[in-house]
Amino acid sequence: MVGLIVTRLQDPFFANTIAHFSRFLQARGWHMLLFTVDNQVEVDEALNALLQYKIDGVIILSAILSDQMAKACDAQGIPVMLYNRSAKNLNVSSVEIDNYEGGCLAAEILREAGHERIAFVGGDVGDETSKEREAGFTERLAKDGLTPFQLESGDYTFVGGREAGLRLLARQERPDAVFCASDVMALGVLHAARFELGLQVPRDFSLVGFDDIPSAAWPGHMLTTIRQPIRRMIQESVNLLIERMENPELGPKVSRFPGTLILRDSAKNTGPLGGVTSAQRSF
Image (cartoon, rainbow, N blue to C red):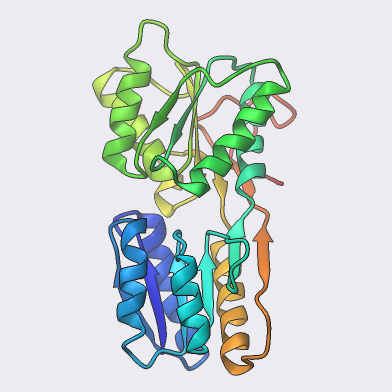
């Protein structure tokens, strides 16, 4: 039995991720026990509850555990896998996307299209994944002597993205491009622009997301985004965890995956890949 702890279950990206984890674990002969939490603070409490069951390993999605709980799992011989997170100095394995390079690439494609007033919509305040994507984005802009036009928080939700979009795009001087740390927030920005402010992409501004959830490719959205190779990442996570469950003497491993920029219709493409719809660029 493998315990799975997840936050942001309402995000379609994570609903899809959980389904893949379940399938990959079952294919290897393991069952999954799912715990959902509302925020990072509740992770240790959920993990403590999981330890009351006869679990053989733990997977934590987009959150980390405390030093104390890491030691408690260690003492019981229960390996921990962090997905979409990493943690230094803890005896845990981790698999994640290269968030920093993803942020760099989003800024790169927007700069290639000539944008200068580029805003960023991040996730929860203090969220490490969002911070890494923002860092890559900000440092790439700095190479051209620019800073983010405006920083907003969208809490990784559609509603949060919509509200951030209204704050950004209702200004007298609005951004000419917006990069969102997740697709679901980007779709919220898109909704606010089209249906509440009468704006269109990419005519009035370019929009880039992150994740490449299935709805990003829907004809009404056609969102330019950074694709995460979730099947390969999840398979790697399951393989690494099972290796440690079956061979307790093995140490933790860290694996970071590159992503792919998917060019669709929501961003102007006037750089080296200009005019190409649904093109791809890896980083």
